Image (tube, rainbow, N blue to C red; front, top):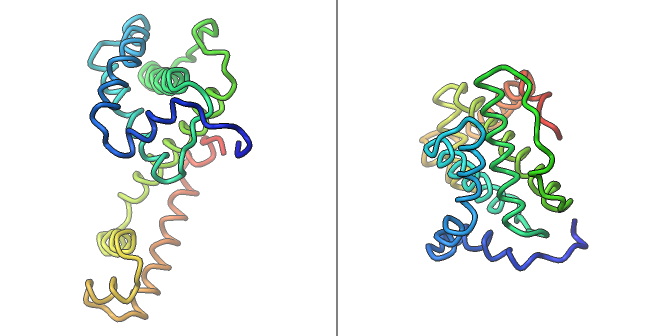
Length: 193
């Protein structure tokens, strides 16, 4: 996607990253009503729609932060597709039935589909990582959280009151355990890579 030109709606992604209240309000004013209407017409409530919007905005923010998300399509199409996919997944979970997508509602914009798919997969990976991280022991959690915040292992070891060699070895073991938990999860193979 490197050769594609950024869409002018990149301002919405940048605004989310900068926590720009004017941009965030513009997103709620311009794009959220369409999502709320869609969810209400498809077995949902306003409250459920608000949850979907919040989760989607958090996923977009996280992907933009971690992966330098570059928008190559209108924000409206991208945002709506993400919210719609998230809602359909919620319906599938709650009913254990196959959910069919009304293709007429979907945007014909290929870039929006591609970006929405990438962001959706990114969100699924984050959820899986968080679930498996929660299963680690407290010592591993504390060590890994410290390494996420502080890049220097010497500083991490000092802050935790352990030797540098122990901190490195323990970090390696904790990452190995986390990787094992992620890969052994049934969700791991369900996430489209």
